[in-house]
Image 1 (tube, rainbow, N blue to C red):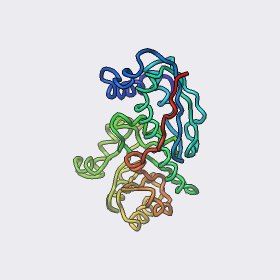
Image 2: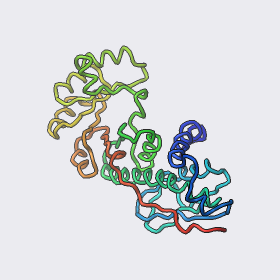
Image 3: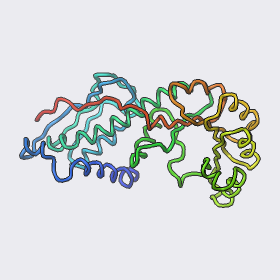
Image 4: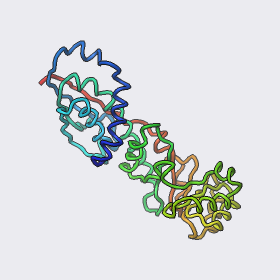
Length: 284
């Protein structure tokens, strides 16, 4: 759940932007059938099994439209929900319920889909020491929602943005002139509280990264045999992350390596939505 400061400073502006995208002047459909305020209620119903996530954001959409709107929840973020389950009832002006419906559901469906997919992938790492990480492969302006959803689903967040940590990827290394040079420059420039992670693609690069004193070494798109050799060489001198087209379908092949982290962009860029609807709207 977002704290009040995060909600007001970072979440509300994004929700308001989404609402402005959907309502440039007025909701013509709602206003054409409802000429004056009319109290109403509507049911939030799950139409697919999964992990629910984003209920606070769902509620906030309606609150920003009209702070007298009220939501009664029957579930909490992180819970397993079932097809047909009543998740909440929303009470307020029918016009507000109508014009906020799509934006509220877009957030809730997307966030719940990510949480559900992450939950299914994290389950495949149970019994290992390996932590599941997300990436920066998020929908523009939706990172704060998508990374929260990963946590709710049982995953962990990698760096939030470019200001959050040093990750020297292939193009950084190319620009610097090599692994050793890139790590040296990062150590000289970055604040001492920042760990330095290096992306490597060959065993020679692994050796360079270890000798240069990298804190974390990311094995990117390497063969299973190469990764085993890399782990033997690193031998605890750095933390190890594995990355490169990791999905629910292939993550099991990595569980025997004993790495510290596995990162997967699929958690955010490929998770399908969870089917959720607002139904049975009526006046009260």
